[in-house]
Image (spheres, rainbow, N blue to C red):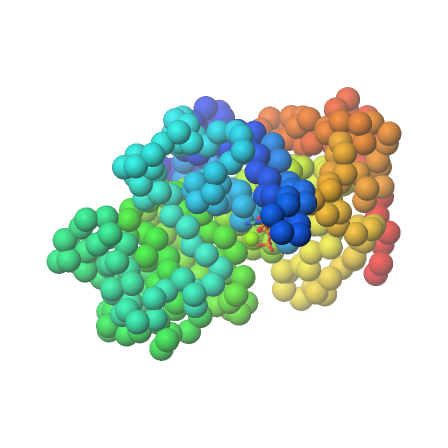
Length: 351
Ligand SMILES: Nc1ncnc2c1ncn2[C@@H]1O[C@H](COP(=O)(O)OP(=O)(O)OP(=O)(O)O)[C@@H](O)[C@H]1O
Ligand SMILES: [Mg+2]
């Protein structure tokens, strides 16, 4: 394992995964065969994941997190954009090349109950992914044993069935099943959301340990800001299919720029021991607009206390406000109002 990289080395590290201007709309059917419109689920999303880094993706329900993950894995096809694995655009890939990519990027889902086959032993559940990739039964079972052990399950569990396990144990099996294909990238989509808090912490620590042990890069999707802060080196905030802010987790949690990120972070319950569950609640005014009819220009403008006329006219571009840290908001385009927005907030405070 390489040691911690210096800031200079960090900026020169080539990303293992890049997404460039990815777009996806889902047609919405009306009566009979007519198409009623389209849900703009992912709009001009770009991201980059550093080797052995963790990029957290946060945002409210329906903002496009899972759609983005499915696009990256090519479980669904984008309308436009690029997904680059070690610099190569994988969107034209077919057949064995695509299978190789899918082996290389494994997903861990929220629900460990539905993602395991209840009729197979844990060992068979894990080994199955290898059988379908042409690995012999003997070798597959040997590897499956190894990865079940790596996720902290006792040897005797191998012949048990998923029905006899707790939620946390099942999620460990799901992680072993992803790891057995020896991927470089794991995409965890709400992987701990269904678990109790104490079990959540154990599974998060397991992710951290496995990441080091197997040199993994992690895309960590969650609506839980505390979980994302704990896990991530970098964070990307999504709102209604678009990226509003991305950069170092430490910087974002200390000093959020975008009015939406500020509101999100201020409304999150604190994880600090001894602190009240919620310090202050910053109401984001109005309803979340329909993704079938998103606001013109900046999609957050209808709920933003700083919205100006031009916010309706065009979408603000991503602006680099400090090295490697980007925000999509006109307030930062020229630097004006930076102090007010960075340190204050335009939201109603409800103590
Ligand atoms: N197959 C589909 N057909 C039509 N609309 C879809 C489809 N999949 C997702 N959507 C819509 O796309 C938008 C983004 O959904 P997505 O599941 O990606 O959000 P999410 O951020 O993962 O939400 P959550 O936090 O609830 O998991 C939503 O409006 C959703 O209803
Ligand atoms: Mg989702």
